[in-house]
Image (cartoon, rainbow over all chains, first blue to last red; front, top):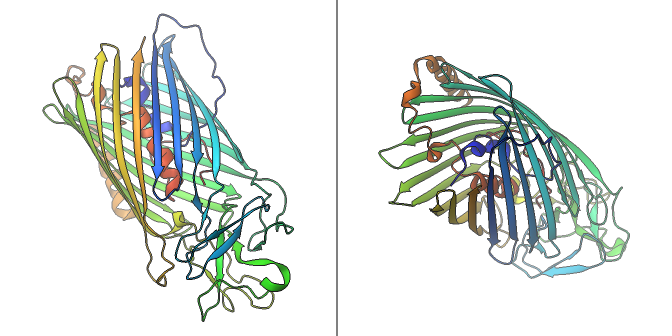
Length: 431
Length: 70
């Protein structure tokens, strides 16, 4: 069974984290709600595979106060695009550590095969009932992976109005993240070099701070409908490059990867990407649940925009089809985004990068497919069945297809679609 | 688009006082299946997956934390 009291604050959970135990009061006659889940996420063509077990525990104590705890382990393997685009010739790259190399055949998108990581994340939320109509939620999150550490705190205030038919929400969160890239922090726009040569690196770690704010209203419309509208604003300051992503430098005539200094210095025709060190994000989010005779429709829409030039639309529809003693829930999600202003397929020698000095004239550049114009479509189906009065098991499968726009990209250099499958098992227990 | 959304907000806020139910009409709204987040872990995993594959984030709440997400 989906334990109701945890779900109101699920919105607080996003990427997740490592936790520090929140203050635990002496329990007073309340039971624990326990949810466990296992996720398998697999991308096609030997790309990222993830296994992600998670556990959640929550209980009430005192006068309507509550504690919620979560712990997630994320084991990742597989290959991830390194930012260079496919070419009509084979391409050789150096691994992030500088001690190895790999060659991508002609016509294939270059993937770094050395990607593997284990991430442990935990979080805790402490809900404090301030009075009959208002409450405060204090949250803490920490996560640790091989090259990345994140720590954050948050607080959210909610107050009911209008005979508890309207709830206003205001919240703020701060995060401090540190990245320790394998091999050190690449110098922006410096070339990748051949294996075992001195790397173009500067320092071993970088940081960024993330501040997020939310205001929102939840409104009961009538006996069968509830809606929610949120506005979130976020600021990220500090290092926002992907230290493992490069951009191909090409000859404007032949279109082949090239750099004049290649033969003399051992440079490879790829430079490390560079993104702005500040970003402001906005999202307007509408959410709703509507009860039919027995079934329930969940619909949400998000409009997102930021100062990197990215705008996106996200539509999400879930239909809970009630069976005699179980339910089916088909799911459709559609996501469409425009490219970041500095997203570029490559850098052209002589125009984007000086042929003699190697100086890049662009302020920023990245060929990270996640910053490209793209459309993601998801189709899924979930089945849930109660096992007893206090437990439920559910499972779902989803197919995700992400199509990257190849407008203006020469033949043979296209970014292929990404296909992924999600398999998930949930078990919930109240005891 | 932004203007339309802002107008929608204002309209909804203005209409809030005329919406709602009495306490004895909350039978359906009180069901687990009517929660605005249908499932804790479905939402949790979805937020994580799409955060690592798309350039957008936010909207549902704040305070989720961070990840390298290569």
